[in-house]
Each structure stands twice: as C-alpha cells, then as structure tokens.
Image (cartoon, rainbow, N blue to C red):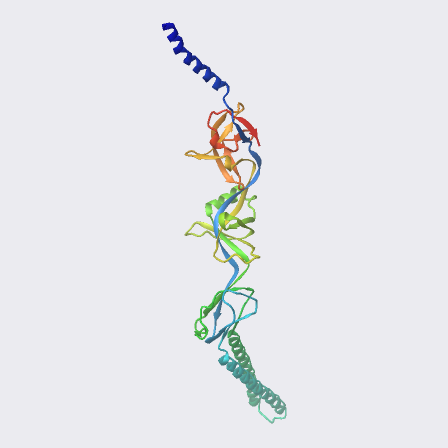
Length: 365
C-alpha cells in the first residue's frame, strides 16, 4: 500500500518535468525587423532664431503746415508707386507759388532794364556823354538785378517744393498702414515732421539673426571654405514653410551688449504672405561631414543615459547600446556620432517587443 502511494506522489513530478522540457523545446523566437545604418556625406547645419524685415520701410510724413484734407487710400491696402495718398491744404502754398512767380517776373524785368541801361552807358562813354562813374554804377545795378533774379528763382523753387509737399505719393509699390492723423486735423509739419502712415515694400524680405562671436570665429577658423551662402528660412508650425535665402550682410562689429554678430539674408516674398516683424528659424550650413552614420530616429529609445539602440549581434541576440547622436538630417534620420558602426544591425521597429539579451529572428528591411 505504501509503494502505491509513493508512485502516485511521484507521477505528477515526472509529468511536470516533461511539460517544462516540452515548453523549452517549443520556445517561440519572434521575427523582428532590423536595419543597418546609412552611410553618406551630409551638410552640417545650425539653427538660429531670427526675425523678418521688409526690403524697404518708409514713413510718410507731413513737411508743411495745414489741415489734412484727404487720405486717398484704404488702410492696409496695396498701392502703386506714385499713387496719391494724402493731401494737405494746398491753397496757401499755391498762393506762395503765384507770388514767387510774380516776383521772378519783376526781377527779370528789372534785370533787362539794367542790362540795357549799362549797354547805353558804355556807348555814351565813348563820346564822353557820361562819366566813368556812371558806367560803373550801371554795371553794378545790372549785377544786383541778376542776383535778384537768382534769389527769385530760388524762392519760386522753394514755393513749388512746399506745394509738392502738400501731395504725398507712394514712393514704391507696397502696403500702407492706417493713417495716424485723422482727416480734418491740423498738422504742423514745417515745424516738426509728422508721420501720417508707413509704407512697406515687401516684394523681398530680409531675415536677421545673431551668432555668438566665438561661435562665428570657430566656424571661420575650422570651416571657412565650407560655410555656404545659401540658407533656409523656416516658419509656421514645426517650420513646415521654408524659403531658400542668401546671406548678403555681415555686421562689421560685435554688439558689446550681447557679444553677437548680426547676419542678414534676403529672399523673395512672391505671395506677399510674410510680414515685417515675424519670428523665424534660420538654418545655416557651416560644414560637411564625410561618411556620416545615420540611423532612424523612430528606432531610438530614450532613458536616463540619453539615446539608445537595440543592436543585434552575429548570434541574433539583442543588446542594449547607449549611443551619442548629432544633427537630425531629415524628418526620419539622425547622425550617430558614437556607439554604432556602419555594418551593425539594430532593431528598426518594435522596441517594446524586445529586451536586452533576447534572441530574435531578424527580418531585414
């Protein structure tokens, strides 16, 4: 009876061992997609914050006194070069022009008389009909009247200029702000120039940005031949709107308050969507890296040590590998500066399905 009892107790143990052996022999090896790094030459870039300015920005100012009679445009609208925008009470200045023209005619008549008189005096001197002093006096009068004509011409030009100041035209094609002075208001423009509005020429835009002086010096020292004039201006959500631009200005000095150098790039604004004052991101190419190792950003994990990959060795075993990364090349690839060799495989997708030391069945992409 005891022997039968022992046999019954041992049987479950034997059966359990057989089940464990069966489980071990039938362990599943998952198929995991793997990839190898891309190796290619890349252009290294740095991103800087910047802002936009229009090609030209001009304040339209009143330079004469008078009542603002009209603002002949729609605020915020586009205007053409030469288009009349403002009229400042011109009546007084028309009268001044008329007075100056009359003064000029008077001066010209007096000059004609004094010149004729001088000629007659010279002829009369030949027959001793007049004295030498009289001739000299006639000549002096003619010169004075000639100077008076010059003064009258200058006064007429000034009067005409002031009259022209009453009519303010657009200096170029552009977009104009709302008027800062209401129609009917009196303006003392002759005393102090009064801004009426601002016009922006936005066919082209300027992008300004700053680089620390030591960083710029490093670029010029290490990569002078590789710095490119072609840059990229980005704006919008995640920088999706891009505009190719060219560097056209480098400040000749360093701003002592910021320790930075100002650079400028210009680019076209064909759709007139960009506005002065917009904040942008500037991508500046500064060097070229030969045979850079690129890995997929989506294949990288992040922990307290930084970025890591799951590298697959020759035995198809997954190994956790800390890596150092550099510049992001595009939306999907990033430069790996250390921790990965060009011929090594790494887990492409499914990071949650693997762990360090796990054996897998690699599936090449």
